[in-house]
Image (cartoon, rainbow, N blue to C red; front, side):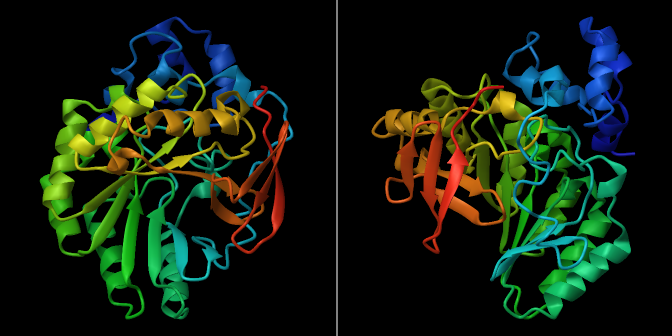
Amino acid sequence: MERWQQQLKESITSPDELGRRFGLDPVETGRVASRYPLRITPYYLDLIQEQGDPIWRQCVPDGAELVADEDLADPLDEEALSPVPAIVHRYPDRVLFLVSGTCATYCRFCTRKRKVGCPSMRVSFQEVLDGIAYIAKTPGVRDVLLSGGDPLMMSDLLLEDILGRLRAIPHVEIIRIGTRMPVTLPDRITDGLCKVLRRFAPLYLNTHFNHPRELTPAAAEACRRLADAGVVLGNQTVLLKGVNDDAEVMAELFRGLLRLRVRPYYLHHMDLVSGTRHFRTRVEKGIDILKALRGQVSGLAIPHYVIDLPGGRGKVPVLPDYVEKMGDELLIRTGAGELVRFPNDCSG
């Protein structure tokens, strides 16, 4: 068993374990975990300095997740955009390929928290093959993003098989991997994995650092190995209340990412996901943070601030040409010219 697999085996997955570690009421935590699964790797758990800190908020179940709200389990309408179980086909030239149903650590703000880690998210190999078949018979698809769950939960052998099948499809030009392993389980980035990834260049990998305390020496080594293997690295940060909704924190994070050869790519406004409202800020907060960064950090360190609109309408940059303020509600113009209402209420 490799070290990363041993870490997975030793992860906290039950409210009782978490309660013993931090003196929490396992009944309260259990109510949340029974609906939205719990898993925290020993590595990521050790980054917590105190209860309620930015690492804690990202991984420890919170009763606020069960507060009734008007948000949606599937705000991006992925189920309706799924021609076969493992594929989400929202944009004409690219697909989301859900090849894994689990993660090393379950983020409490996950956009797929309705099913990641749950029985409904189990992905069979036949579903993976059906997804590849769909891509092969859809010539307009040139860009495939492996996601889930976390694709790097798979073995090197299975990942290699999937990448090989995708590379054999003539019209697939770009393959991307979305993973949080460099953040929550950097031991997963082994020499063997990097040897596999090197074979399929050009390969793009977007990871998901949200706070500068996640930029540890182990995370830096994981990113170094990936970059040295020729993998192009980007980062997608989610704007989270109580985690990174501060310009100085973001500046430290984005500068640190560049040192790790990771390009800040997106700053995501929180999706309208049920059970995550306590993480949401007002849109003005994100705008103010980016304003504060301009001129203070390199342009390379400034990501695109985007909103992924509900109903599967896609990502829209938060720019004056797209967003019209309407008090507690915004009116956002999509690339197709459609006007969409988006709540600017962060109460929860």
